[in-house]
Image (cartoon, rainbow, N blue to C red; front, side):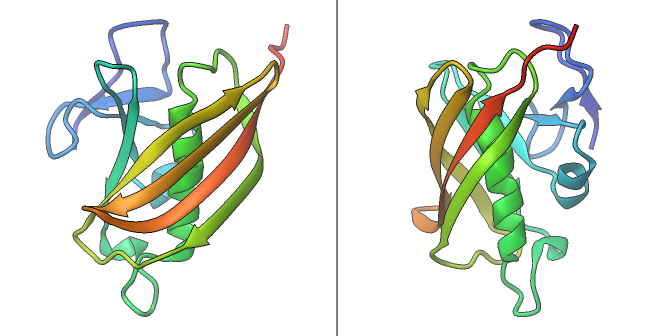
Length: 153
């Protein structure tokens, strides 16, 4: 897959846009080696400002029962927290709380998408909620809080 740095907005050397394939035009971050090795996870800002996140299930995402591993859901959901908060973040942030419920299993080849967003953004904390789905089938619900970090001099 070919990716290129974005050409709009402030320079972000860690943000890439796919130029071909199923996720052409979608973005991913390359700053987190854990997510990069366990993804690829993608996000896209729609014309109305909403953020969509997705990944295509590969064999590396599966557990011994050939279902998506719970840790993969959790890693993707954490990625989604930051994608959903993209309009609120101007500096680094960290996850300070995360809660989830496992509802159903996704299989190899399925497209897992995240729907959700910011429920409240305060001075330093951003509260978010989301659901992972494949088609119309809910797979996993999650909520989390991320904390904006102070910019370093």
